[in-house]
Length: 57
Image (cartoon, rainbow, N blue to C red):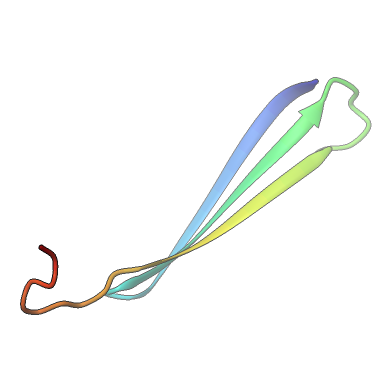
């Protein structure tokens, strides 16, 4: 059972079509033996394709 959850986010724009996003979840249990008992990190690379003539139906 976890007592507290923290969320940290970080984003960097690499180009007009790419964004790098890092999301970190920190979980702390009811026992206060460590600052964070479990950490889950997600890394997203978001890319948008360039389609000048409307490639989408």
